[in-house]
Image (cartoon, rainbow, N blue to C red; front, top):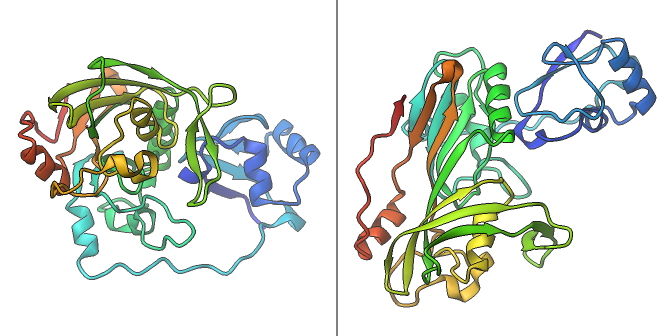
Length: 325
């Protein structure tokens, strides 16, 4: 057996190193992990590590030969075949590309990663975004399946690790646009409401939980509104909890238009002709770059949201897709 260099996947981000190892090598004991770390045989991105170190997507773990503890062999599942024209369509979503980063405008309805019953997802199609690189790009953060907008990929393991760290350290500045049913009062504020995950009849669901929930903070601002029927919100999540914006807006009494999961029947405008799709869009993302520069990427609204903006006569500013400063 030889030394392996294993890249941490996006779904494994935030796992402790020892738990990541046990997931890949179920028979590996804590004592043996500590010995391998102490002797420098186990490393992360070439550096010595500790058992409780949290991993980031894109980091590379050096795993020495483990003899009898080879990872369990499972039948390799072939990646779902892309439909005709799908690769070209995916490349058409690119908003920005350089040697380290690709940013795309993820369409609503496209899952970022696979799961139970989800065979068609972005992660399975990333070979289409290799372009001139030797390796496929890596996911460094996620958007809900029904949320559209800016999604960033790292083109190398090193770039993915740097980007994942920026998200972890809250150095990535994210702005979302949403249409909500009703109009929040006051028109500007901060929602500080902890969230926890609870099982439900239709799968897991996030809930407000003041006692045991993880901290979740969102800044919001009303950019325009059509009386008390619908409001256009600018949302900035200061934490990155699952479904945070959807739960927080519902907690304001103004669920996101089309969000039946958290808003129920109140999330839909009956008889209006407005799309029943989720009206939540990752509008822009700012990321720190080497040399003190900032990369800003913006994504145009999806078709169903653009139609709703026109219906309510909300005028959006004209903006380019990308700029550096």
